[in-house]
Amino acid sequence: MTDSKKSNNGPAFIEHNKKTYELPVYEPSIGPKVIDISKLYAQANVFTYDPGFTSTANCASSITYVDGDNGILLYRGYKIEDLVENADFLEVSYLLLNGKLPNNKEKKQFDASVTNHTMLHEQMSKFYTGFRRDAHPMAITCGVIGALSAFYHDSTDINDPLQRMIASRRLIAKMPTIAAMAYKYSTGQPFVYPRNDLDYASNFMHMCFSVPCEDYHVNELLSKAMHKIFILHADHEQNASTSTVRLAGSSGANPFACIAAGVACLWGPAHGGANEAALNMLEEIKTVDRIPEYVNKAKDPNDPFRLMGFGHRVYKSYDPRARIMQKTCHEVLDALKLKDEPLLQVAMELERIALEDQYFIDKKLYPNVDFYSGITLRALGFPKDMFTVLFAVARTVGWISQWNEMIEDPEQKIGRPRQLYTGDIDKEYVNIDNR
Image 1 (cartoon, helix red, strand yellow):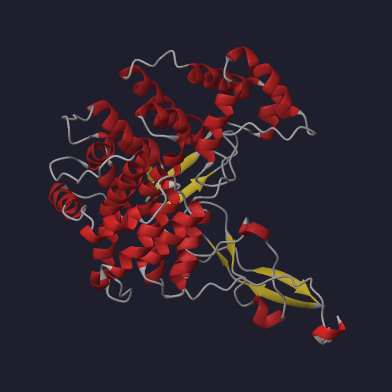
Image 2: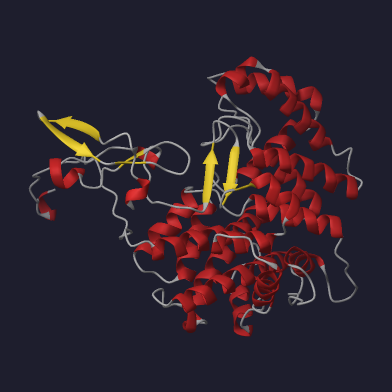
């Protein structure tokens, strides 16, 4: 932590056992000040207790900033609304990786470096046939990504900046191919090779939905929608999967293993599976006239039913990604002539209620990005078990950017959280015959 980040307001103090300990306070570019407790254990022989790390900063980062109270999301200082409106996914990827937007020459070079690495080693196709046909695509994706380190030995030395760059671009390039092959395998259709003449999102959709027996032309509007979806999910500060990638990386693990760890964490229904849960909820409600019944169930503290896609661990106002996703959802449904989609009508009425009902207002339960993304992805043709895989495709660039930042941070060390031990002590071993 550099001196320029220290607060001008002076240190903080903690008193324990009649002793006072001075703790440095750091000033971020924006957001709450940070009290440095890293030396507290050595000085006072005490740990701090913070389940879920909700009040703990585990790193210094300049990549993404989330202001949950005011509904702000920044990538390297740029508002998410501006990036979605003006940039494509690879331009945003360059920004996250390098800290600045590319010029024309840099953009062309970066696009080419990604496009030329989209193919997988041919032997990797055999990995897919080792899975049951009904295997979840996330299980396949996690396994195949972990196996990349067995094929690309020239980019696993984390101390070599060139190898880190090669691994970063390989992962961004190959994730759509890995995901599309997982989808094709689940449908029993043949794998489709990537094409170098298509942009990132169009290439992904072509690999997913084309078949050898007929021509397939990617709808430009749908491709743009996919770019927007990828951008919205590219990074989101120190969430569970990103923290998992950083923790795995802190041990010196190779980048492919770290990203596989992130995919495994993302698979959790409380994280990457939230959009699937939101769509399941809308399908359960089915029609607008049944909404009051489910709203009442959601308000009932004794009813286990919850409105999925509402509220967020960080956002306590309207998720800025949700507004963009809502607009994108309408664009996709219009293009596909699905404007009368019943689930959209249910979603719109639920949103209206949530923004006007005092119960939801008091609890700050605003629609989040998952609320509309499930409808949009289904309209694009993806089954529900692919939703989290698409999330992983987008989030890979965020994971890689965070991983790179961690490797280059001289203050980072292997992650080692502490605990509040509540188990037994001083128990005597009893021979098995006497138990």
